[in-house]
Length: 94
Image (cartoon, rainbow, N blue to C red; front, top):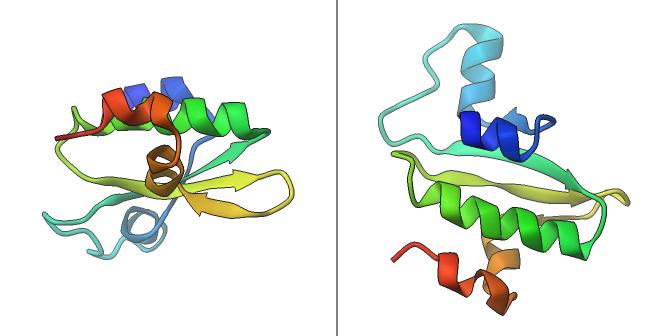
């Protein structure tokens, strides 16, 4: 979690973790992923964020899922973005 907050202190959470936090109900399971949302200002920032997430994702016990959201309101799944940018290829989880 510290690495994700360091990457972007404005990281937002949705999905089962958010529902568990908001309701106090047991939405989480051992197989739950972590659904996050990051706002990115441009393509360079999106690529840097996706590459960093590949590195972080390779070191944590749960799957990190989520979207990169542009200032115009468009979103893309961060792994899909990373897969289209060769600079991220060296950071992919095996």
